[in-house]
Length: 345
Image (cartoon, rainbow, N blue to C red):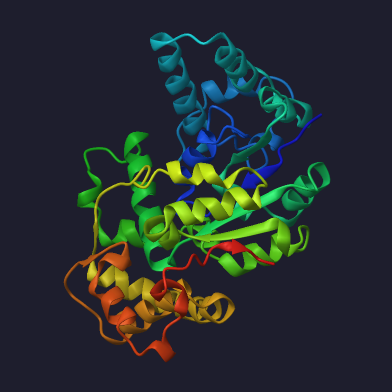
């Protein structure tokens, strides 16, 4: 069995769709037709018989979101086949949707990538329990791990907005739009266990480093996706040991970007105070962009704002303030146009 050569493990709402699109464009890389396979976080625990049928008719549940995602993936793939039937792609879909999961089944999903560097991106792998990471390591000890990070203030808000979009799409919030979200609904999203776990970057990295050496883990920053997409992609291609020259064809725009582009002032202040300690630790560990994240938290926590603030926060007045500070107090990475993303060692 040939398991993946690399895994993208998150963080959700942090540039993973951009990453997936660019990896799929490289001639020496192979990724599945679907971005998120959800084997280790969802399907590995399913019974060996009857799981696809059970999932097809599963009732809607606010916290059990995967059956809806699976049905959405199935609907999307069927729609694509109606427009253009590709026998090879159809066979892959039959394996993915109709067969019950197992390690052998998972490996079979990468058979079409024979001779290439193969991998997949499922952001929820970042919050696997210890035994889940251990299982991945037992199957693919040489895999390269990709982890993208985003300012927690932005990521938590974006994840909460996305959660509301999904609840509305699943008819669990009827007669409401995301723009009509109440303070209570947003706070519920901020406090959701998955949303909080996905933002605990240092514990996530510590857990994965217990199984993978630092030189097999690439940490990226969404600011590099925005400011230096070609250079960032060149670093990622080098990390995956494929020709970096294809980085010139990088997709510069955001993928799966959603409105709103404004964050309520009370949200920014609330999240700044909640994640201040985490941001102190991140700034100490990484500097660079994480120092900007900490600066945002300190400014927003100490000087609360009533009006909405533009996000991503590099588009706000906070970035200009931070970048114009004395050189000795600002990390050199963003000021000199250097990419901060890279392997941990």
